[in-house]
Length: 458
Image (cartoon, rainbow, N blue to C red; front, side):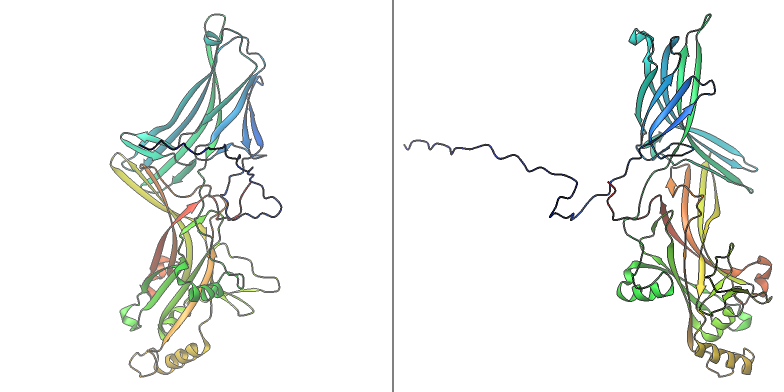
């Protein structure tokens, strides 16, 4: 029987090298995770009596209301000049969601979505006088429960949409300091509240479409759709004509970036392509309500408010009564409220785009005009009415600066966003004399708080 072999000797391995987030000389960053930069300022609120002060930290300077994001750390201090008679100091974090349906079957509901309570100090437990300054820290929950369902904490908002029926939705959050004070006859309870905003953060997973050689607009679409068609999302529909005019319908293609998740401050590019017989296109083009820049480089439908022209250019408004059809692109927000088996939804505009139309190619217009003048719109005249033409438009759109939050769904309240292309008479009273039936194309999108960024924030 052979003798067992002895194990080899092992020595302790050398310690791992020192690592640092900062790049040393001769090194480069290959990949980095974006890091949220914590604000270094503070927000201070004082009670009207002047003795009580609450300061919350990690806030931006010169803010009117503290702001916290998802799972935000509420960090601060409580101070009082005369705490000798305090028996207990409590900190409460509260959040309420109030929703209402207005009209014949009015209903309302109030849901407590955050109800956190912490004892900062108690004479019974401490056995000594209350200190003048007390630190506190609390983390916002990420969800709340209603019945057997769990929902993400909604952002702070106040929405009121009138009509029959109308709806209201308001979500508010509060930091509350509650003091139990010893009195000569009985104890008194005092409280001091600080409202704050809960604004969850999010950002797109991809950057907006761009090309260093061109600006946004028609050229951007042409440059990118050839080499990377997958970066554009397309939705199409048919602009129908009235049968009495014997005009062929027009195909409408609406393009937006395929990511379909955008920051609130993003300028979202879009492209519109109308394809059909030149006679149909000319009929639409001659009825569009437009404004024209005098260098003839672009023709854009009027929108409110109108965008400024470049220096050295003037804007010419066409007020002819036959120009009554508008082509608009808007950001629409849909709010849906559900109370007691009633569901009400409303839409409103949160952004208006600027559509720059390119004049139709000269040859197409010439052919169509010749056909129109000779046959008086007779589709059986034999002229080249079946030749296919096109009309292109491009532009960008962004949210109004007043919009503070993106989409969310918390069961009772849903907020959804859409980019909407509409071709219709400006006034509904003109529908009967319009050669075309109204058309609306709505593309669902997701609005989030931040724009895409590849830069690491230290």
